[in-house]
Length: 568
Image 1 (tube, rainbow, N blue to C red):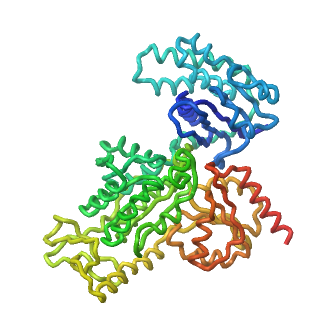
Image 2 (spheres, rainbow, N blue to C red):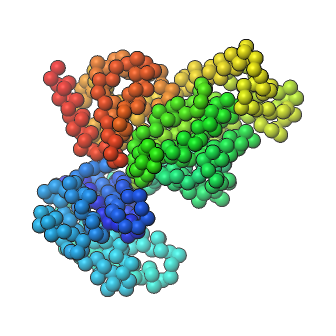
């Protein structure tokens, strides 16, 4: 009997698919079931076709799956874009008018008049609640849990609305029971002790834990979610949130906040970050810390604004004119989103450098269960010095890090400048001072490489084949490797992509074959490794169609590598 199932909701934008998703995944948590939910949407407010995939099964599930077990069609054109994902045992459910005859006769199809049932319950807008009830009944889950979620969701509404929703849930549930799917879903005792998050919320939580008290950004999907999340938390955690007039203003506001002693962040996407690059360079020259989050989406230009890609790595690594230290991080899981976002503030404050966090639409918009973060100790060092009258903002030190002062804290004058400057911060064109200051700033690179976030390594320590990835590809590769006999094979996932951790050289030198998996067209991380270490990459597995890697695709890649090893 199957122990996992993939359900896809397919309908038009504006039909409430996200509402069904929210109610359903919270019901799954109550049922002690693990899930992974991810969405792909068209770039429009109404119409088109959007889908949400909800996978239910073991805790190892954490990626997109191509094949669909149950397709629930909510509107017109709900089958067209996903037809290729259906298999011989797929089940299709929806109103007859929304399912083409050619599809209905090719697959097991159940016609359910969701809207008519909603009308019977009192209002056609209850259609999504009927669907929720149907799915719960179909999976043999508890109706009372769905009822609890409705009461929680609509607690601010009048009693009539709550009553109608419960009635709609009941009607859908009764019909769903007649179409029950026999499936043995593994339950775990730990799920109620976990929390439901998506990547956006996880990065926001990490920022709060890192002491973020100022956010300035100009909306640009998919990075906007972090701005919205922190705006909702602003009053609770004392965060000043400003929607700037543009991205240039946003990055400069962030620098102003850090200069004054704050801990600030901005969020954007690749196109917005392109406008911020001068500010990133200003951060490098003035040695004023900054934290910037980039939610990657496919470019160039507007590209595919609601899809996913890992196309901005080189943009981040080489952002800003001139040479100066920077740190680029790329979390691969919800847990890493929290801890790496928190760590970004510590790194920025410690070294006085710009820190860039790279995520993408897939990671930001996907929901799952993660361990409750332990924020019992969120203390951090501000790395701020009380200034004296002879304070030198850019005092040359052995390690390149000058004592950091802020205006008003002490008796000194904190002078910063975007021009080259001497130790006091005054402009200079002296060649010797320029050389000394450049060397001072670049000294930080040596320190940074000693305090890196090490890659996660899975597999045989005596490997001859090494798979490498970064960022959001972690979940799908880790899932594909589960229960595999991986003698001779190891997988290294990098959540710090620049500067490369020192262990990278050792790992790559041991490998006789290196395979790099990336969601871009040119193999950007592979090129970075080759450029930095002179290491040959033997194969790039690339995808750049706006979708994340599927578990089927990566499983085939790993099976191919295992076959190659076994033949040696």
